[in-house]
Length: 199
Image (cartoon, rainbow, N blue to C red; front, side, top):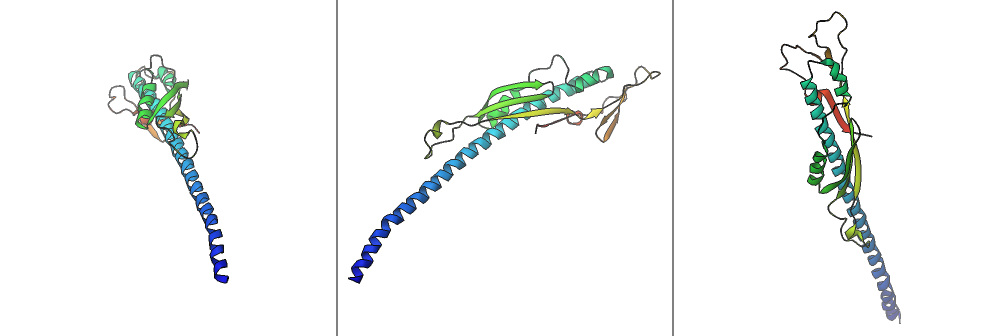
């Protein structure tokens, strides 16, 4: 009789074992679904960050080009450093390029100020199939803002200065003493402006 009871107990434990294993498998698939969604969101944020930075860097390069064009007219420098320059080309095409390189596309892109770009992207790939219904049709979105900050300051020559005298351009810890007769060594875009994501 004792032997029969032992087999009976074993038979009762088997359904419990199946239930526990099934629950663990469900949790494993649920964690996988959460991981898929998180990876998709991270990809969207990476694409948005890259796109916003690319658009801002393109504008920075144009501003630096304008500064080189007007280097002999320091009265125009401050407007350039403030981003108040007419005739700049739109830069959102660079955002489109960088978003595409990160498996996403730009939903909106624009300047929210003379020296900043805000971009919103959506991933091209969905979250993917999982135990959570509808994830195969879910796409992640993310936005980012990139800011262009001038790194340089200067003081216009005072009265009595020679007409062609140029100010000393101080870019953080470096001074550029510009010679109007020899302008072969000029600061580059990265010397004139910093580009970074807004906090």
